[in-house]
Length: 192
Ligand code: M6P
Ligand code: ZN
Image: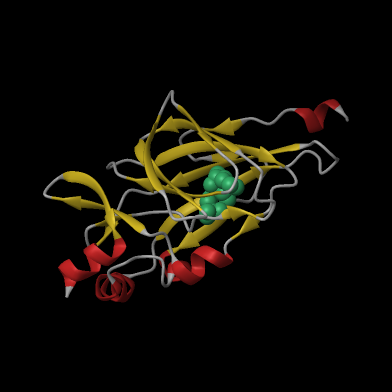
């Protein structure tokens, strides 16, 4: 590979790789992802803010290659629920991923195919290992952007289908200033 293809600079504030047009996810792109639908509709009436953006460094698709994405989740909430990423399984289910925190603070929700959930803290100078066969979503629980890198196999692929259908079983919400991961069903009952 040519030298110019081996290195990229990234901007920790912006959450982008140099020379890359980042993909932007606005609130309107996240229909069905937040638990509190009334709060979602009300927020959308007020505007369509950027919730997060992703910029990728994909130097190769050869066998054994790695890709890296940098993402920036804006601070914010829909009702009690913090701004989040869509979340995905890898299309190649066995593929693992490293998440490396660069700025801000948040959590990852990890959910196995059998519905076992874990909440793991993600902040600057921390690294999370996302095992294979595990859906992963990132949540900004702070009041500044959460910026992080994800490093994964070029063959991993993003499978959003299962999450778009049933969503994660847990939600991360701010209850009286405390970040809590609770069952989606239990949270929905508190809204009824
Ligand atoms: C990380 C990586 C990316 C991913 C991004 C946003 O940077 O895992 O591959 O695209 O987070 O997450 P999502 O794709 O679930 O919206
Ligand atoms: Zn992933």
